[in-house]
Length: 218
Image (cartoon, rainbow, N blue to C red; front, side, top):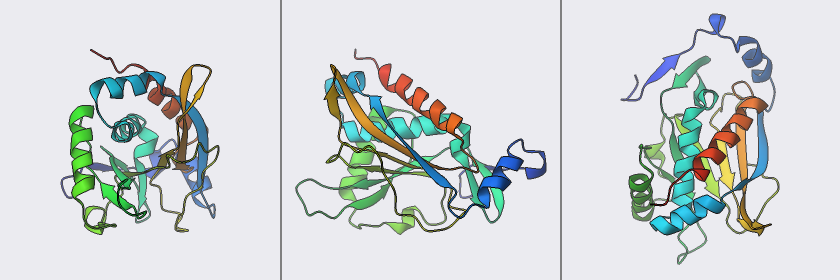
């Protein structure tokens, strides 16, 4: 445990991903990106019925599912591999009625979508700094999240430091659109290949779709 956050150091010699980790870590750019459309028809009805923010609900859902896929919780720290017990979202926020400059906001994850959306929205609105580095200093138990609601993108790339140890996933979504009586959302997942293979991204997408399809309107 470091700073109240639980992590586990991985014994590389006895780790089943040792060969994959060593192979992909030597790449000059070991991150890759997969984009796909997810069906948000039911989820959009849910958030509207519950009168919560779609954006903050998606931040919760995408982080919640990242915590369920163990490969998303590995990080490289000081040439060692660690496994975090829990990840938290660090996301962009742009207030509609102000200028065109966004903030980076980091929120602590909890186990309830309703309390999280209220808390995250309040924190974003109350944060004065564009980049509150105090909240992220020394931390890698994060998911970097951004929303681009102006474009229904088919591909997305991120600015990134050329640091082969940077293993924090990047998750993004764009402008949703209607197609054959469904509402689809362009969704992007960028991960470090030393930890996350295509099968794990596929599992992530499947779990996320299942989660947002099964939020019940009561």
